[in-house]
Image 1 (cartoon, rainbow, N blue to C red):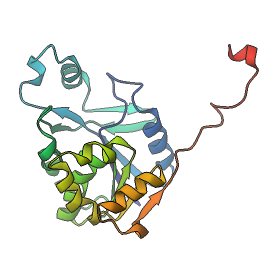
Image 2: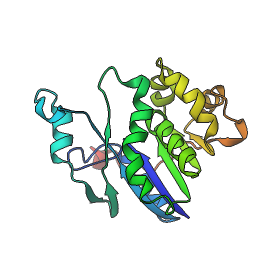
Image 3: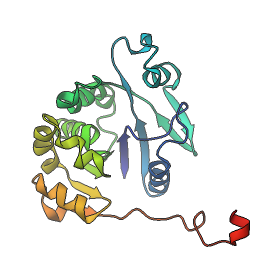
Image 4: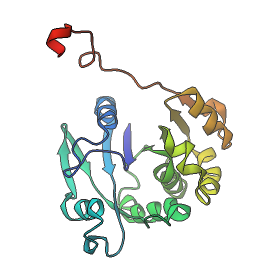
Length: 209
């Protein structure tokens, strides 16, 4: 199976320690399918000139278009995001930003896997509907409980989420939340976040100190 993973939550050259759980998850997934990763970077006109917004400036000027992270080839396409005021249209802008690139690969993928419900998941579902590619969305927490509840975002999610081929969450409470958006409960799956027992295991107290 050929899978495209789309997420805003992933390490990059400027934030190498970001979201290690997503990096580990996609590393494990890559052993079971032909996986491409698009770890998107937010962008808006003039952001690089606004030096006091250092997070935006660093990401725009320093993160390469692609890099190798933990043995995975990762692409960093930019997407248009309007800070603070853009949540109502964030899904549409995200999808429109990625559409030209995805059109050049429209026959390459059997599935889109979007990690983070809004705007990533909403945008992926829009793209999937347009190009005839099934989409699975993973919801982690505040993406569905907080961000997706904002005005505009909630209406978008009410349209998009029921059209997902599947929704994966990390808790039963989040699964119930996904179902409240109209998703068929049979297509909602709870997969509790695991623990790497090679890293986290009982050790000698003095050695640990």
